[in-house]
Image (cartoon, rainbow, N blue to C red; front, side):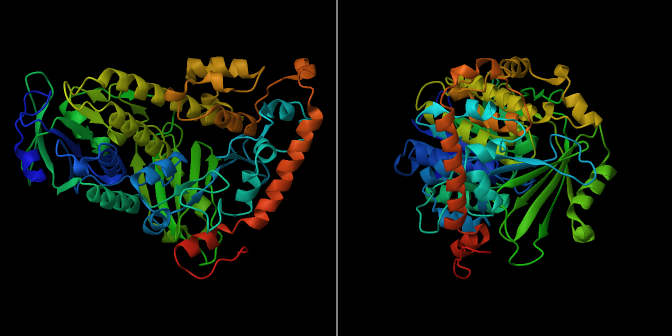
Length: 534
């Protein structure tokens, strides 16, 4: 019945259908399509609501990009909201835990085989009785103090010791440390699809033949080669880079941010572990190279690896050399995939009766993490702003303001990683050129020379990253915030030193109390018994 009504619904413009129903047609599957379908079905409670209907048309020709597999901690709230069991998700998506990102060689070009790194954990920095501990770290002897993340949280020590962020007996989506996941993108889509169908989403498989517009320029209907005419009140474009609805049909322009974010290619592969008992890292490894960086993600059963680079600075053959050097002697066994992309987004992602979610709306960097984060932000707004009656484009202006601001702010955060580098290669020197930096970032960096980033630097509803995320990048890369002229304004040095010592002690205890990451994953997957040692 639902399939027939979507196919034959009688539209009166895009203010609603004559039978009083609101119909949503999601075009495209993958992470974007199925996460949108499941979230809206749950939020709008369509299973028990005959006035609402969600159909997803999945084309076999639009595959999952799958160039990286990672998330931010927000995904736990989303999965919990959807009613997905954490252990089942981990098993079904070949998932592992992610506690942050380890950045290797981003600050300086390696010399004589020496490498340096810093860590961006998901845990916020410790506080001392509600007071800010950061100024006391900044006032310590620069040569003697511990790295920022190691001094401010226990998660740095836990992750470096290859421990998991929780114990096996702790509840779903909870634990002593903040965490996200690494996962297989195709398998995640399958998990989300199953849940969406359970929640009442109608699943059609087929190709989009054409998109017809009405006299106002809104989408009148979609023609599927397999299912004929499909009509809805709201069309959600999850067709990936092809952007069948928002781009090809409605002609909404794409705003490139290539002058800010230079990388535009990724060469990707997956490689099996050398041994079944190889420890699994619980963080993404991002290793800088001469014209970009290489990611390394530990899944259950394989490592996902990709070389991200700027084609203006090196060619494809050189990128392949960099990737093969990273992999080592086994590179001849590995099949690689090259993906071209352009960083940017559509400033208007809700136009008339069409909303873009996922790659059809924008793409900033070739890991799933920021992409999934933006999908979560978009579907949360669609669910809350959804017009149950009246013009379906009523929320468009506010939605577009909020989503464009999020993209701009993520661009600023990503640029921070590049512009602070002191590496010598042209790619990195051009990234450090103030002409390539957003004006807002330039202004903030000037302020942060005299004080650390704080919560009032950011507007919560427009941000995907908190002030402490900026702190981890700034101080991990050696940015100088000089508080010495105001040293007398921070008199609680003794209490701060005791807190730093407690953090070190708690970190040592946690490495003993928390299980090895691989052992934790194996127990969740029902492989053997859990032990604390690898």
